[in-house]
Amino acid sequence: MHAVNARRRHSAFTLIELLVVIAIIAILAAILFPVFAQAREQARKIVCISNVKQINTAMQMYIQDYDETIPLVGGSPAPGQGFGGLGFVTWLDTIQPYVKSIPLLICPDSPFKNSDTFSHYDYWMSYGIMGRAAIQNFPNWVTRPNSWVNKIVPGNIAYDGLAGEADPATSPVCYYCTNYVVPSSTLASVARPSEYAFVFDSASFDSWHGEFANPGGAGFGYCGSYCPNSSQNSGADGGKCPNPINMSFFGPNPLHSGGSPLNNCDVNNGDGYRNFDKGVANISFLDGHAKSMKGQAFLGKLTDDQQHLYYFSPNE
Image (cartoon, rainbow, N blue to C red; front, side, top):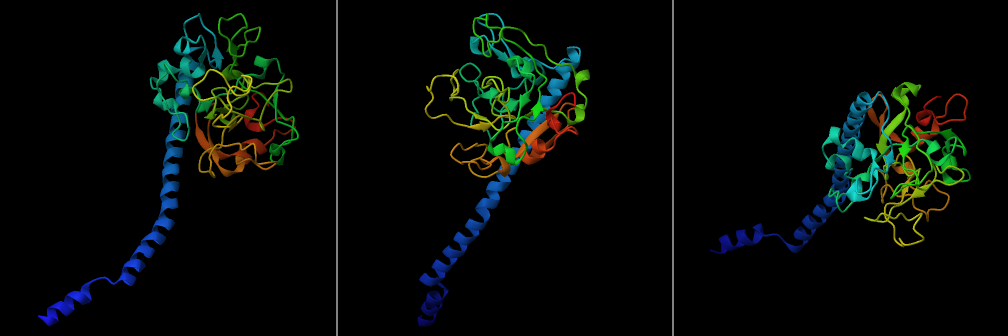
């Protein structure tokens, strides 16, 4: 009897042994949890680049059906039509007959994930194309001077988009409210379709260029944000959005595999990179192929004349 009891006492865990096991589990968790988080982020990035690729395929179908013309970035149809009866539609609405899926238009890394198109415009907030600078009567969009972005690319470097707009100020509800209609470019007008950045990760359907335009031609190096689920944006509503979310870079947004928080152009980060160098953007080119690129890669390359951005200059 005593021998049995002795064996039972010997087979039990002591407090020290239990604490050692707990400590080992805690160490393993500390090592593995970041790995799991990175794996999940990698999976989201893969889903997102697949979305970009499929959206571009739909765009190519539209382009072929409409005499090789790029869709309008946005426009104002008749009153009561368009998004939720708002009277405004984007290129994401235009290609919907080819996509037939709202969730496909939403990036897993975007904070805007509601696919209810009648009460939210979240599907406008994951992927963008670039409108022509002529929408705001500029000869070119230009990179921002005297800014953190000049550590990557000089200021006032010119580039342009392909998508036109049809949003005259006489429309019942207008978005850009320009006084004329700007046609989109055609596929034949682009010098290097396989190297022109066309559809990409962006926090706005027009990559933040049009609605935040200023006399200098707002471009790379600026940041913008919409108020959540509102038709107003924080740059044009007189301060009615005191806590905007998703402050994001103009143009492609390098939000994947980055630091925390992702896709955040932190306005309190002084003259630093504002997290621009901490992630990659998924970019699909005009010929249909897609790849992930670091911000320094797609901004830092200039054309031979050193006056234009290589991946965003249709005619260079």
